[in-house]
Length: 266
Ligand SMILES: C[S@@+](CC[C@H](N)C(=O)[O-])C[C@H]1O[C@@H](n2cnc3c(N)ncnc32)[C@H](O)[C@@H]1O
Image 1 (tube, rainbow, N blue to C red):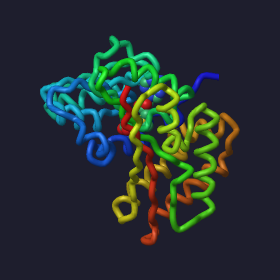
Image 2: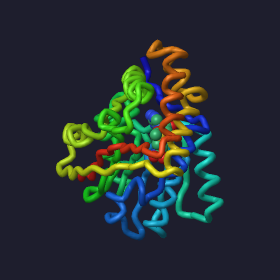
Image 3: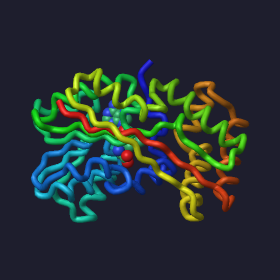
Image 4: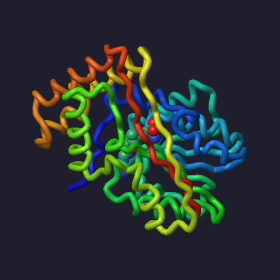
């Protein structure tokens, strides 16, 4: 069975990707970036983090790659619209990005390894792409460590259903806690690991995050995957949607999404 990207690229999914920036998603890496560096961003999605990496290494060059031609086109439009000229986006595969060994100072991937069935193999291929003193940087969620309050049956169902579907698609929903071990297995000599989190709690956070998850449960690849692969049914999705809508409207609503991070040297 081939692996599948669990969430797909419906607008309700991209609504969360487009919010991401270097500051809120790659803060552990930014202090290591220098003008002139060559950076590869694997699984760059709509490119909002990638253009921030490009700003940080200007006049160095950044290449974002993604399996989806649609998000590559969106990322290209974003860079053009923002006048960021030292970045380009291409369709390519995370396991075999198609560059010479040592072509980059930094290979970065945000929330990509959690979706890959062979994360150690991907990390080993990225290790070959960095120069001898280069860095591979990765950050991934740990959905098993996510906390959503107040507890509700629909949100507990969300957690178990998302994790089951991700595993069914050959992903690792608690990837954050495995990054360090995966990098060591991939042969990196030095692996620094850390953790950071997103906290969503005020009215505007909850309207955005609760709203996008409510929409994903009816419209996105998540909804299709749950029913098609027998992880749940229409009642499961309705309960999850109801849980997120109630959380969105609850002034007590609060959640954290834990992430693991690694900075690995060949
Ligand atoms: C969760 S999104 C993260 C996007 C971006 N890094 C961000 O954080 O906003 C994961 C991305 O990885 C891409 N992807 C998944 N499997 C891939 C593969 N084998 N090769 C290249 N891209 C892949 C998906 O198309 C998707 O855009």
